[in-house]
Image (cartoon, rainbow, N blue to C red; front, side, top):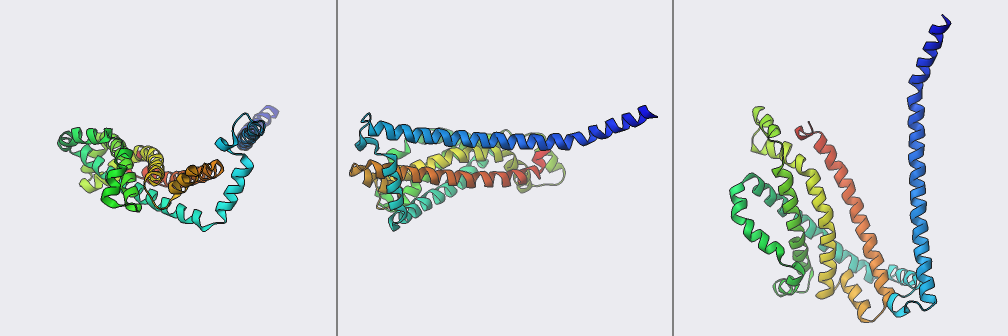
Length: 286
């Protein structure tokens, strides 16, 4: 009897163990995350201290890299001025409009090329040739066509994003399991159903991989385009400080660009999680 009770108590303790182990594992992950953040903050503080020390000791010219405190003062100055918000809004529009148009066109063409191999073979030499041309070298041509306004930078961003999304979406759709396509057709699905429930969900990881690359391309294209030919924007602001040899202003704008890029990346992560949920609800997840 006692052995039976002992075995029952042992089994009960084993059944209760997993939740406690789960909580311990969760606390361990939280602690490791805190340690990671603390380590990152420490690295950042050491970097700033080394930067300040190098400049104060004359190891690096202040004209070249300024001082962290001067960069901070310039950031505060910019935050209090309307010029920063006007420039940031212009750059944001160029990036978002160019990113959306380039993504839609790239995914659409990737879908057509993957589903129609003959069309892909027809256009493949021209796509490859155009892709090898540096798009930033076309800024002058875009300015002639569209002027110094936002449109020339939007077209530049579209040209950078388009090919990344084209190749990624083509690869994702071309590698779809044909059994999934046949299963949807056996259930009476048409071409639109196959695209919606099989091709697009299967291509989601490829599309977001392309979006991560395209986001960098879009930001780089907008900033470089504004530096070369523009009347407003963060790139125009950056070029203005560089022309005045104001390194503090240059670093301040670069910090703003980095913060802006991280915000866009965070939004992209949220969109990716939402799309993965939609993908997991489709037939392609089975």
